[in-house]
Length: 411
Image 1 (spheres, helix red, strand yellow):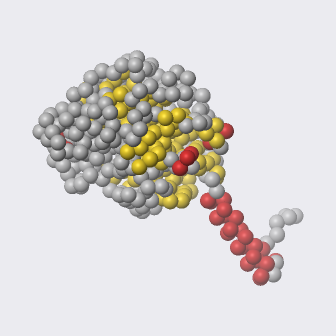
Image 2: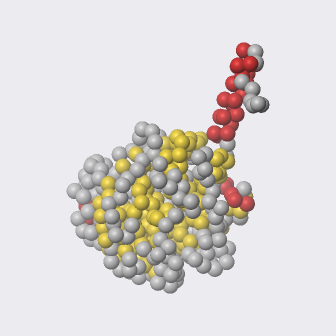
Image 3: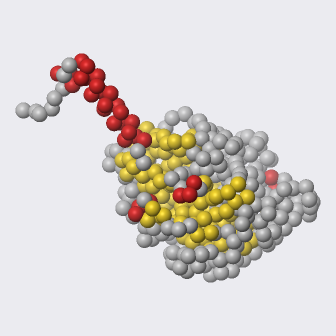
């Protein structure tokens, strides 16, 4: 005989009260900082950036430790700080300054801020676009020696000391290129090759003449080579869009960037290199024709024996599995209509679940709200997208996976 009791057996007034209580508990669970995705999916815990910081960028090392960089200060010129969350994100270490010149980072546009990579030795590598006052300065455009606000803007890099208690002096890695605008990136492979990547010009030109450039270090960031082109001539590079790079566990180096062919074809291109950045293969993976710069960003993640990439097209976020052979990817989008979705971030659990986070309703100067969706190992959505609170101006979320397979959303 069942012990279950039907609500209909109570009085109407009590039934209404119980129903209201059930709805209220459901809302509380949906909005709590820690929630279970359901359907056997990993738990997701949301963690605010410490010290009211913005633009979090996170990476997890082989020991399962989260490494986090965030921004503080005015949008046109501020500072970067590094922390390590402990107790699965319940607390943070004391912040360590990343940039050695005050005000040399920038947050405006939510594209040009820091990116982070962690080597197998635990050393942290950070790259970011310098602000207008940043030093050391980059090269000037010989065709416009004083007109462009981006003339002389450097692509900056710093790495932590072996103990992770301080960062070495920031360095500008642009040796022959200029016109830095959209955000750069950093990646490190398991052999200690460090790649810092940006897009710019090596001679006077327009967006269609811009290329993706890579400066490579073969000694874990001690020294860097002169930058070399990674993208093909003619595709261009969308001036104020970001790009993203990633080195997988096999040492394959990937890149995502937005083109500017004829200054109207703002397509997503995938780059891949199997020889530590000496040569690159390239493939267009998603087309978008728009005569404007959408100021978009990308994301990579690896897990469950595959590499994933995410990007924005026409106000929607897409993600797909990719490979070094540049097989044609099959882009997927989260549920629901596109609502100015921007700034994707990916994480993958050991059991093949994927967490995709993004900004919903974003626009210039308005970050919108945090949103996310979990997909199972067959790439099927698990439930409906999650919705969080409003994000700070110029900010977004960073998704990571812990060693136990659970997800963290730092926002």
